[in-house]
Image (cartoon, rainbow, N blue to C red; front, top):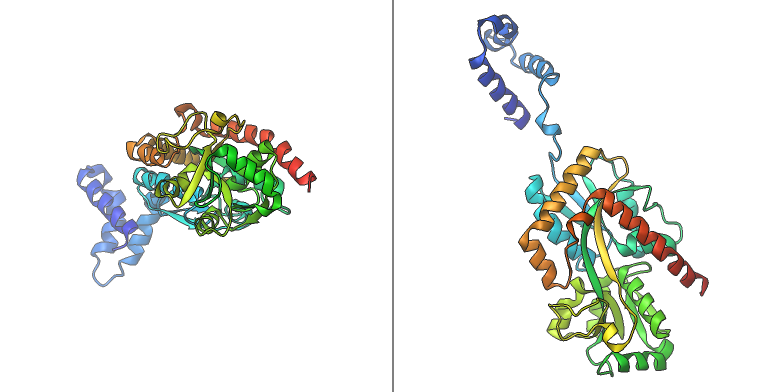
Length: 361
């Protein structure tokens, strides 16, 4: 039996036991089609459905009534992908529906973001954006097919994560000061990997190399995951990426970490010093968040925001992100209005910096 028909039948039968005699006449049409020998039962069902449609909410239309797709505009294994999977796994339990992650990478996150912007605004296609795809890529990538401020509705911020300056494990420098000296000396001979123009790994190193006065050769990949793989393989020299996606590689010894962009050392990587300890003014936090296409009903946004808020309160989410060097946003930062203000301030802060790098080319 189909779920919708079964639910209706149960409600009619329950209601029929409770009705008094004054309602017998209104139920007569249902008895006629159900009891008359040789008649087709389908007209009864059609009439019944038409009757209750106007007085009983249709359960199948309650959001969410099916699985939700979250587009991650970067390859699997990168920071945005890791955070999205951790958070949405918990959100699905609150919403009562599965959440499917779809990795749509390319052009610094703009390919997947554009697809999400063009999706039907029904709440069943969302975007797990990052600082790079939502702030930097629209400035640095030509012909972007979405506006981060007008084509999306913010749901909430999911995590903060400092950047870590890492290099291939055999890089010839024992600490950050020596590392900086080597980069300055090598110039364009040093190869810096990043996950695409505008990606967080691109932005993180943009600030770092500008601060230390180095001009390495940039090697772009279709996401931080492939970039990290090549760094581990020794095909490139260094990169700067969120702790949530490189902490495990640092702990495993497959890459060498020189500095973290946080104000304090990370509990999960206590042996990695802050850049500030070496006298380098390099502090930044990379953020990630959930968005919906413009036009999604406010009640749906509110329901998603509530599920996200509850997910971030779960100890398993907090501990998992903390183990990777990430942190949970404060309660006041999570609601859609606060997140919207934050995104706007980030765009205003970074746009001039990013535009200046384009002018230097």
